Every structure is written in C-alpha cells, then in structure tokens.
Length: 177
Image 1: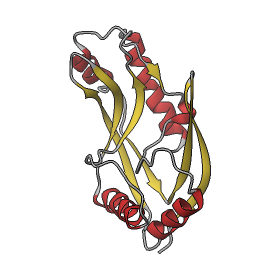
Image 2 (image 1 turned 180 degrees about the vertical axis):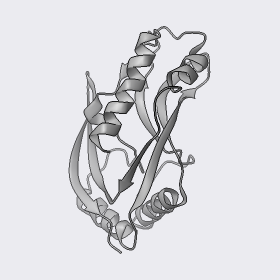
Image 3 (image 1 turned 30 degrees about the vertical axis):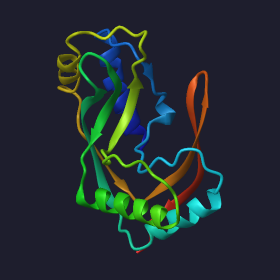
Image 4 (image 1 turned 90 degrees about the vertical axis):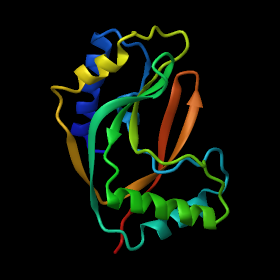
C-alpha cells in the first residue's frame, strides 16, 4: 500500500480520535489489506510456492479504498476499518489464492471474504460513543477515496506481543502474466 494512502488513512484515524473514539490504533507501517489469514503455520516454503502459483497469470489491477465501517454490533464494536471496493480482479485473485492454498492442504477460515484495512481494535475497556456510526460517517465526508495499482503482494508473518501485532514481510511476489 503506497505511503500517501497510509497517510490518508491516518487522517481518518485522527478524525476518529478527535471525536473521542478510543481504540488500539494500527500503526501506519502495519496498515495492509489481508487476502487470507493462515494462522500459525510452519510450512513457509509451501505457502510461498502456493502464493507464486496463485500470482501466475494475474494482471495488475487497481484497488480502491473508501468508506469506514465496523465489525461487531453497534453496542460492542470490535474492529474499525476502511473499506476496500471488492472489484472483480481483487476478488478473482483472492479466490484463486484461497483455492491454491486449500488444494495444498491448508485449512482456512470459512467466513466470506470482506476486503478491508483494519484501522483499530476496540477493547472491552474502551468507551464506545453511542453515536459511533454517525461519527464514522462524518469522519469520511471530507477525506478522499484512495486508488492505487496492485502489481503483486507481500507474503507476511505477524508477531503478536503485548504491544499488538508487528508484521514482517517474508517475500514480495509480483504478478506474472
């Protein structure tokens, strides 16, 4: 994700903070769009091969980030996110990647894929404004939509500690037509 897009997303977060929304905010360097979550695995080489196979035959495409939302109910939201338009190209690639991984024997989540960028996680101790949906709607009014080209993707590993998640790029994989 380009730096200017990440900076724009931080502007969203600044507006949310200003409006009193409390969360564990994702550091700018950790902002990303997940394609699939594998959980704890030891077979990095096998995942790398799957990822390269999935990238084969894929053309570069555009990703559009727009809008804000939340996972969880209005009374107890858990995640605040920026939406990613589910373009045909993005969804095709994500489905291909999932199929290659499943065919290789990996067990993946069953829930439907909803592309998004996690901006923050709301913990039980955080105060949740009763008007959070209105705050989200207001925060996105004067911030532009972000569009950027995707010519490949990063295979990433997350490391969880008491400060949250830290992400390490294992390998960048470019699309090859």
